[in-house]
Image (cartoon, rainbow, N blue to C red; front, side, top):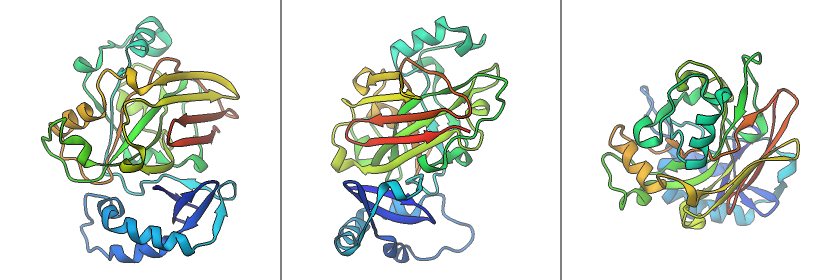
Length: 283
């Protein structure tokens, strides 16, 4: 199943080139007293909601995809965990290009570890990217993003797939500079998720997916998740050894070679096999 959020926080099931509105099922999530939960209630209840969404979608009229504004498929991610330099060829280009490393020490992922992006950076494809510090280089980084579906703490790699709700395209925007990654990668709109979430059962094995991005029609990044240094299961297990992972948490698995700058007015098209593609306008 492909699940999206669009327009005024509507919930939809993607059916070809149309969206079937299933927002009515949100009433089954209930209400929450203060303090609010640490997880995304929709993602946490996805298992029991899927059959109801399928039923609602069958009777819903289709809305053309090109007539809606796509939001992030995850409304309330508690945290965004990102894996740096998780493709060997990207590590090589980062070491070779001073415009990328900016004098920072670049290590492969086993030494670099992971880092956090602010949840406030999350937007959907239809909201676009608003650049800040445009006097500096702002780069695109396309990535496979996974959404945690069940609470996970100290899980093994073998157990990890059971804790994944689904996958989407992630765009990890970054400002190049000497500061810590989390600062340079966390401005508003610097984490694009979309165009929808494909549930784990529909996507299947995430280890062999082509991912690409073009800027104004020019190919930039083109790779396959089979080239990941640490795969999805290993990343979930490693992250869960440091953090408790909650439903709705997002893990960005790393970007391949070909990262490059964008400027206001550019149009990016990011795609991942078996997920889809999304068009993002830069302002």
